[in-house]
Image 1 (cartoon, rainbow, N blue to C red):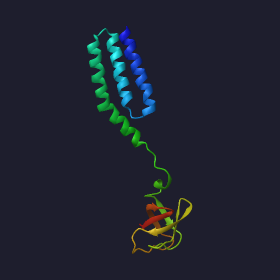
Image 2: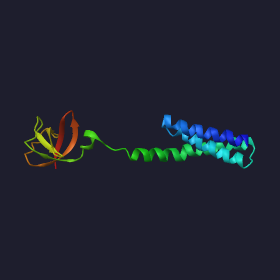
Image 3: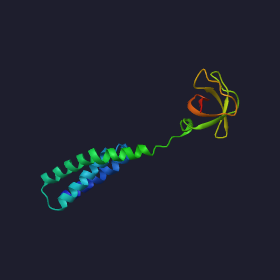
Image 4: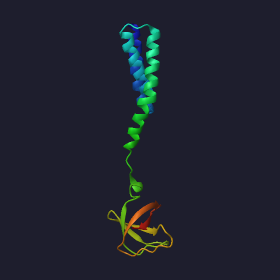
Length: 141
């Protein structure tokens, strides 16, 4: 029963330590330790418990961790000016390579054309290609 307690405590401590790291490595090792606690609880010898810990930890690191990381990064929200890139805008004044103004989501921004030879008349719909400082770089659709 002492082996069960040791593996259980190790698993809980590793999972708790994951809160500080955020890399999901300690979480996977904690899962391996909990699996070893189950093995020890079923009466397996210590060598089998250690083997269960190693195999389960490696499997979790190779299979579960990448899936969790993909899921975490897939929900990363784009905010600030990065959220404007690729979106629509409307020209308020003539926009060329040297300047102009566009309205993006109700706000007026200084702008310049993405294509240096392009002159975009007022009232045209454009796409925001990038944001350079406080200037929207736009391209006529």
